[in-house]
Length: 428
Image 1: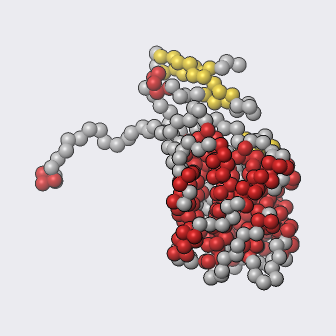
Image 2: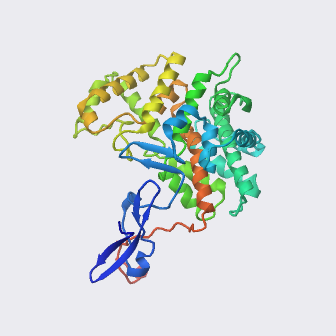
Image 3: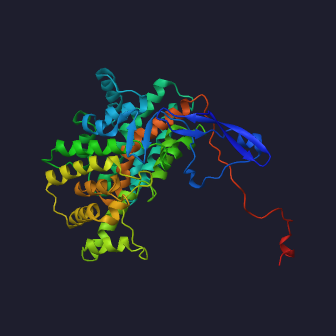
């Protein structure tokens, strides 16, 4: 096949290079299109635009494939843990036992927050949205770690910054969670393991012991959320990082992008939908009919996916984790019964089956968080905990690329043409 594409622009024909990825994906390189022709391309929402080349995550929405650094998400969810997967994403390889222990030790070394940060967290209203708190807190870390403000960090400094954020974002979340409930903070016990430690920090009370099956289910959930190619928040991290902004400002921007209900807020929207159904008598079959009615504005949240056109490979994995959590905790919750009913109806209804509108990862993650007693407004913050290593990997790749440039999209101007300035007293 030709390694160039021809573009005809009136009487002018130019050749554009074709880039082929390791999985056979093909792209037309338009880097020099404007300089050679004066034209740019329009792609609203960047739906067909490759903003970079990357060797972190491969996603094929048509075939339902998701791989981190070449490893199947199914294998990682079954055999790995969140810290090992985080190392893989950030460093590109599965660690040896020694490398994994060292990585974990670095994370453990940052298991406390600077006093100034906890003082700041104490000033937020208890009903403040955790995403706003996280975004502010992460950006504020820049005041306490000036050594990490230089954009040209050494490899060892990047490793330290990664470990610090992996540790302190977790502690920050747990600290504000307990403050919002009017409870004293619980210090980190890293020996429990990353996920079990987090569960202990948010749920501890006298006599409490972490259920390791539940902690394992949380491990799986965080692995499934760890990265997802060039989504809105990952692209935001790369764009902000391209300006040579420090790592704290860059990751804080990722939090802000994830906050949106069309992105990380989707699992919160699932629970809000279930609450709506419950308030209307719990008749989920009625709402299934409403979802199929093109004249009805009701939308079934947590079904289908913008990228996956067949099925979300994470959904079947997380469903098992969801079943484990619900069974282990023995939770009795009418909203969870509604969720199960919606799932069963959608999986058997030809309308949804023909359109591949199956429950996605957001549907099940919301149910798990609900079962764990995590308040609805903290669901998206839980997503942050999982997505953090993906953002850090994207940041590290972006700033380490010798060909990286500051991101600066173009536009087609559609406003008024040149106008004469009229003095205010002469305007009519």
